[in-house]
Length: 463
Ligand SMILES: [Mn+2]
Image (cartoon, rainbow, N blue to C red; front, side, top):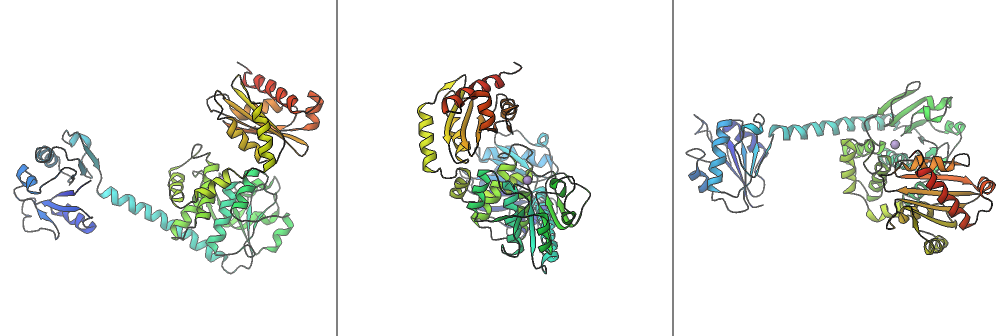
């Protein structure tokens, strides 16, 4: 856009704008109200004779220029609109008003309305949010600053949200892995999550409840004690800090609690902490938090708040796309690629189902192949199956508008193994022993036909 021509109605609005100052390519003008002709605010050019076609023409509007009219007076804006149309027929008009509604405005093909004071108000509200987050961080730092060793306890089998938050808290505390280790009662299981831990260069120590005694500070992240079973270890019932987005639980003590159930991820809270303290955000940390929000909200779908969106956008500007790709698509081992080649050579889509059987593979190959298989033309369902240790493991994807994948997998594994998942992603595990009992041998062809029959049945159940 070319120049912005700002026209303020009266001295009060002009003075308010005068405090904001003129942006680059902004020309400040004002129309004095009665008795105001001597009160010209500095930096403003006055439109003598009121807001008439001649006065606007004197501003010499060119194609590409835009107008902003600041006013709270209906008759004023209804006179100003047509005058601008006459002097500059193509120019768009922004109306800044805190009292007028759309009904008060003149007809104009290219006009927007927004609040002037509310623009500032929104920024002030946002700043107060930063301030309350800053206060939290100051409290947490103060509480823990003299502790020798602070344990950052995550849920058993920590998920990406928890992992990223643990990493962030340690950074906020300015500590190292020796003085603030990430710990859990159960190791990271999912291959994607192991990839995240590797990509961030982290170590998550699996410990027993007794080992908590080595810490003189304890924080719970993305978890509350109820997750540790019906009778949680006594040490976790009295902690220093809890930061979480799950519904608030009772029955334990924490010096500082920051629990925000309306948030889709704890990573959103941690991102707000970082912003509040103007933390120098490195791509690695930003990528971890971004992935945490992405996976907890299933890419900003389920249970996502405005705050998650705002944090996601902030992190997106700082993250490393290459690192994110490495987390989401871990490198395939060469024998996994060969197994994929053999499976692809036999690929077919029948009844909208594409099943690829890989044989014996590293577990993280399976979900990646499932993603890929869904891209096959005509496929509404993709299943990638492989043998991991003594289990048949399979990942399932669908196009989203069919039966929920989690339900289908539960039906497929019923009586044979375990499984579950969400609307469009699921995973099942059947011990080879159970598979052989029902289907005889566990050859690739046998696995393919058994899964095919089971999926057809499960998908069309109750139809
Ligand atoms: Mn979470």
